[in-house]
Amino acid sequence: QVQLQESGPGLVKPSETLSLTCTVSGGSFSSYYWSWIRQSPGKGLEWIGYIYHSGSTSINPSLKSRVTISVETSKNQVSLNLSSVTAADTAVYFCARVSSSRSLDYWGQGTLVTVSS
Amino acid sequence: DIQMTQSPSSLSASVGGRVIITCRASQSIRNYLNWYQQKPGKAPKLLIYAASSLQSGVPSRFSGSGSGTDFTLTISSLQPEDFATYYCQQSYSFPHTFGQGTKLEIK
Image (cartoon, each protein chain N blue to C red):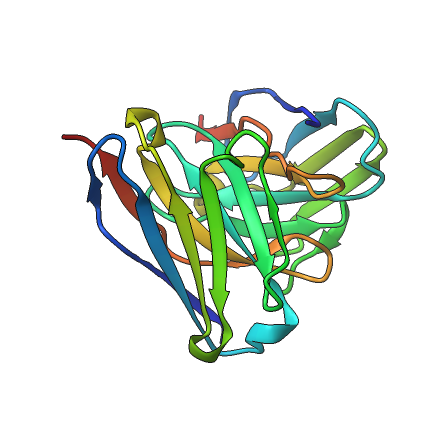
């Protein structure tokens, strides 16, 4: 069974960089794209971007200047860096697998990141 | 960006009832439309992909239809565990945008 687990600091100071890692177990890591999605408290879902094991990425233009998504295939991990954070970046961050139909078929449990001094 | 608009934003229904949630795209997305269910404090769960294909393990009371710009999610014979928030998502073009969600509550 495919499992995804997000990890990283739960509190980040304004103007600093948010860094999260998604560790994947089960299934074939290199056969899929892996995505990041976030959800602000009480709000809807925002697609951040995704990455293939080759390193090929697609990033939401609204975040592109601040987002880096990277992959470490040897560890079955995908990472998200979001720079220059503000309170508006406070959200639950999810990683998910992108299926062959481009849907998100497996999700991590999500991790809450709060931006506050 | 393609805008996804769901209606209604919320609705109440009874156990055993039937509900239809609609999702409209701001331009044609062919059949690249997915539906998710989210319960409080949990990650979304994929229900329907490619507009009408039922994800493995999802009960058959869930069904999806549509193509182009207009789509529906139908839940027949509502069960207590179906009361949740539902999101549509287009995966036709980047960024893969979501609808604003439809909260389904018990009447």
